[in-house]
Each structure stands twice: as structure tokens, then as C-alpha cells.
Length: 94
Image 1 (cartoon, rainbow, N blue to C red):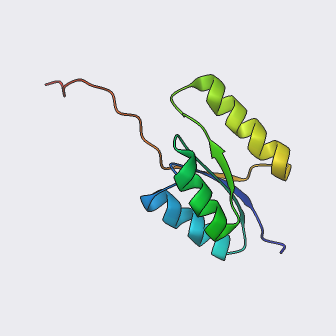
Image 2 (cartoon, rainbow, N blue to C red; image 1 turned 90 degrees about the horizontal axis):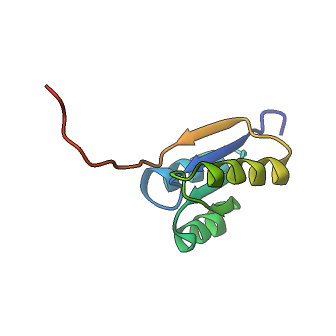
């Protein structure tokens, strides 16, 4: 497919991330999904053909390894869907 792209979806094991991965795969793109829990990633990969890459995006070294894995597998990375969130405690200032 001439328009095929390679996408990485963080938080891709459940909810919006999983739905996004499914949509991208249906559109004919290569997809990698990442998240902290391997089992949900495995299920999305079985449904979509995505590359499951367990990773904690709160760890900079893990992020570098994640990108290296995707590029090493597909030869490139065309787009990111930054769906995973990191919560930090604290209040909202004035």
C-alpha cells in the first residue's frame, strides 16, 4: 500500500488507545502498541497484527528502547499517538 505508515500508540492496550490501534490497522497501516501491562497489548496485537511492546513511558530509557524496537522492526516511525498519561500528585495553583 503506497499510503502505508508506521504508527506507535502509547497506552495502546485498552480504551481509546486500543480503538485507535484497531482503526489504524483497519486503514492498512503498521501499528505498534505500548503500555505497562503485556496481556492487554497481546490481545490488541492478536486482533490487529500490531507489534506489542511493553514499556513504561515514565522512564526515559524505556522510551528510547521503545522507539528503537519499533524502528528496528519496521525500519521507520511515521507517527505517534500519545495516549498514555502520567499522573503526578499536586494541586492546582491560584
